[in-house]
Image 1 (cartoon, rainbow, N blue to C red):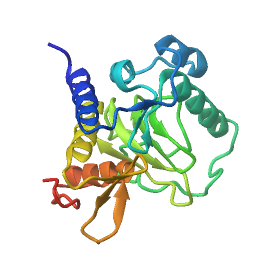
Image 2 (tube, rainbow, N blue to C red):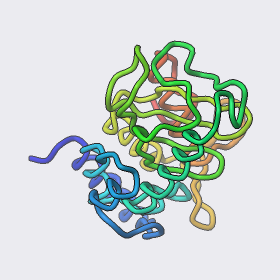
Image 3 (cartoon, helix red, strand yellow):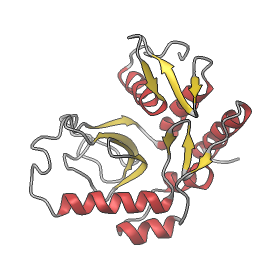
Length: 212
């Protein structure tokens, strides 16, 4: 029997195919050794498992990274952090006050599962003093600069991805998924997964109608 990550990635794939949304390969290429060559850091085992099934695939508008794209993105952001002084590019990094996530722009120990100009979701192998190795963090790369641990593991992150893509409330237009929120605004797949993760972490009801 496979691990939780392997089982969940396969279930996500199966649900998307059954619904007519087979994940398209957008960011393929490379393997775990490629990632390590680019970053100087070994890829987390759970990320490698995810890459084997969903690496580089687009999940209704949320692009998951493959080994090559994850390594390239991580190396660039880590180089930015390591070549800059404290407080650069922003004076404050919010969301890490509880000590779970290191208050830096980027760390080579953060392996991106999804990364864009605006946000990143990453496996954290170099956590803060109150964090845990393998936690999955959300990074806002805009002016808010939030860095916070949302999921305890890649498996927890994938469970929320599965809940979102399985929801009967999911609306798909032009290949992009949207979900209604209790505030009457819609959320993209990535943000819906993030807000569901926050609610579960904090013991709050789901903010997404149709997802318990």
